[in-house]
Image 1 (tube, rainbow, N blue to C red):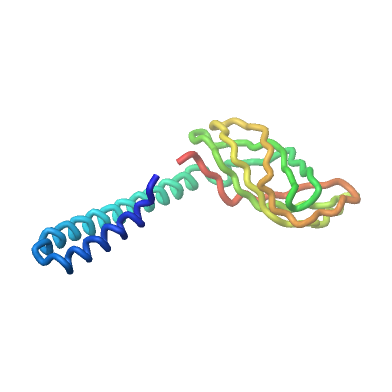
Image 2 (cartoon, rainbow, N blue to C red):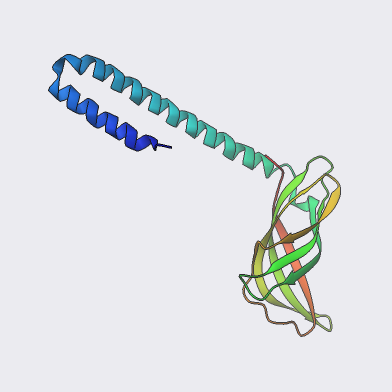
Length: 169
């Protein structure tokens, strides 16, 4: 497939040469150039409108489900380091109306020994999973950003705070 911009540049150069070399073609070339510039301007305007519409749909999708209507349970972290972590668990969609498609959350790993919990690491995670209204689904995600976490001396626990719950746009 031929790229559009090099072809347009070549046409502009040819039109400029003809404009200078053949005065009788100046009026048709000027009209053609005006039509091309108008078409390009309309294309740019349509693309900008399309982009704003997509942004609006995404913002609306992130406002349909309240963050309090999403719960994560049974969280388990596996892997050997920051680039290789996998988080598994269950995501609950408590919304009675909307399907959940994306959850983003802050995540804190704790080491709990005899009731005393200490923070080991703080990061974030994302679960991309479609969950119908008032249902739950098991998930597995590698979209986990945590620094290296040492092996716990006691029980590993996770505390999370959902900051985005989105529906399909």
